[in-house]
Every structure is written in structure tokens, then in C-alpha cells.
Length: 208
Image (cartoon, rainbow, N blue to C red; front, side, top):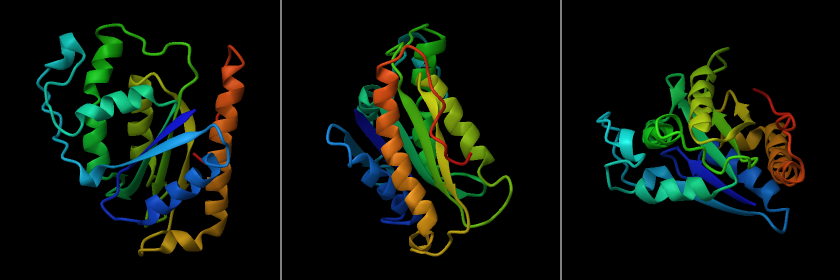
């Protein structure tokens, strides 16, 4: 099983990345699991131009650092989107990455191509927020759920941490970090269990 972790924060080793590393440590406990990190802030990814160029070809007309990421996402068994919350939404890096998957939406809904149909691939959101607002994660959850649908990924739940503002604050949330390790373990064990069955099972029991 291969997990692709997309880091959407401009901060190196920031709070959302700390959460992601805890999940990764749980994944690594399984000897047959592999994972890869992609740091979006190091890449040159242009915003979607809304040009409709992908409507017939299911391929984005822009050739930049996003181009190889399409194949990485297609090839992974589990996709994890990691982002801080800015103004009640995903980071600009994360949202730009997601918007470029209009090409994959076109593949599914215009070309009618179901990619790796029948495989129990999943997607997960990890997000951190400085405030404690009741709806602080709503926008991020809706956006990633629509992304996972376009990619033919089942929604594998989320792990959301509030009240982490200052750099390093995530390290103090030991209970949440323990949940993150458990989530990483569940991602792999659930994938193996799903591979043995034709149906689906409930997503890992993490807060939504």
C-alpha cells in the first residue's frame, strides 16, 4: 500500500506538518506500507485558468510542477491532504493544487472514465486551525470531499485540530498526536481489510 501525503502549509515543520508526521509514523509501523511527502510550497503550480482545455482530453493544458503530481495521485492507494486553515479555508497552496484537478473531474464526469474502479482507495484530510470556531473546518471539509469524489477516492475521514496558532503548538496536543498515530495504523489495516472484501467498511473513527 502506498500513501501520498500532500503538505499544503508554507511553514516548514509547522503545526499541520507535525500532525502529518504523526500519522506517517503510524503508517510506517506496517512493513509493507510505503509513503511519500510532497511539499507544495516548493513547487511552481499555476492556478487553474478555467479555460475548458481539459474538457475533451481530461488533461490539463498547463505544463508545470503539477504535471507529475497527477500520476502520483493516480498511483497512490491513499491520499492525505494536509493544510492549515486560513480565513476558514485551505491554504492557497492546497487550494491551487486542488483546483488543478478539474482535469480529473473532466475525466470522471465528461469522459465517463472511472479510474481504478472497484479499488478501495481513500482520501483523508488533516487540518489545523488557530481559532475554536464551530465552522472553522467546514470549508476545508467540503472542498476535500469534492476533490476525493473527482478522484474516485472514498472519504477516509479526517483529523482536525483547533487552537494551534503559535509555531510548535501542535507538539502540546499529545492526545491529538496519539490519535494521529492510531489513524496512520488504521489507514493501512483498513486498506488490507478492504482489499479482502467486495464491500466497504466505515471510515476510521476520527472526528469530522
